[in-house]
Image 1 (cartoon, helix red, strand yellow):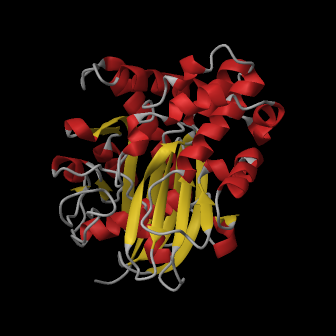
Image 2 (tube, rainbow, N blue to C red):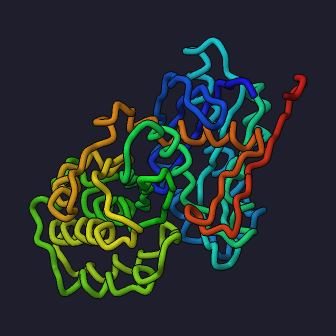
Amino acid sequence: MECLSAIGLMSGTSLDGVDAALVRTDGEKIVSHGPGLSLEYSPELRARARDLLSRAATISPEDPELRAVERAITQRHIEAVELLQRETDTVDLIGFHGQTILHAPERRLTWQIGDAALLSRETCLPVIHDFRSADVAAGGEGAPLAPWYHAALLHEHEGPVAILNIGGVANVTLVDTNGGIHACDTGPGNALLDDWAFLHTGTACDLDGALARSGTIHEDILEPLLADPYFARPAPKSLDRLTFHRAMNAIKTLSPEDGAATLVAFTVEAIRRTPLPCNPAAWYVCGGGRHNPVLMEHLKHALPAPVFPVEKLGWNGDNLEAECFGFLAVRALRKLPISAPTITGCPKFITGGRLVREYSKEPY
């Protein structure tokens, strides 16, 4: 199949907004990278989306507030696509991840909201969406999915190497010396720290790690958190954004600074203890976490190999996850696998995603 220009759209568990980026690919090789951008959610939309996460286990798909938030989130994605369309001559396809509000693979359930039909109508483009459901239905974890893209980018890079994505949840891709791909969610990423910072400062994140840098780690709180059964499970494995939200109760008596320091330590120590089949020769960090200097400093002290932001590889760390879903959209269109036993724990290699085309145009 010829290469396609795909816009990937990602709204992660940090709930900060929409990342959009263009990538040209055949679903196996990356030919070129196009422009990218980020559009923040308004504070109101972010708060409404965060409330949905708290209620998602019991909420009806027809809940009026759910539908209203879904439409507002989709509209923000439409705006992102329209802005990118002004910067490029050709767009063939959209990869639309949507906003995860619940991830419970043990119940064969993962839920991303977003109106793919509306997105297709408003942009006059075909949309691939619902990337995770087929994997979860088949017994996989439904996450992480980015390892396919990481491995494609690393095709000429000698392993073993780890790509660490620190978003709301943190996950790792290990590409071994034979090119094998291994992956799992490591534990909390930025989500707990973001919630803690917002609670105490009204700011959506611990900007520049200011709180954590001034605090003291409370080992008596940290070790019980790390005793959670999740950390004893073998990979592949995955998490919901709220899996470790009880940590907020554990640290509620701490000062803002000490709570932030302890949460950073929680993220880093979970990464350090992640079960991997071999030791990476280097770690490269993407996601919002790489912008937190305190988190990066702790990683460099904790991990037994050099730690760099992915920019060291010449990658654009702000566009990476969005590019990934453009890449996965083309893979899905070609019926190539986006699930694998060593990545998502799916029993076999299967494809995923669903195609929506809500306008008049000849199909591929």
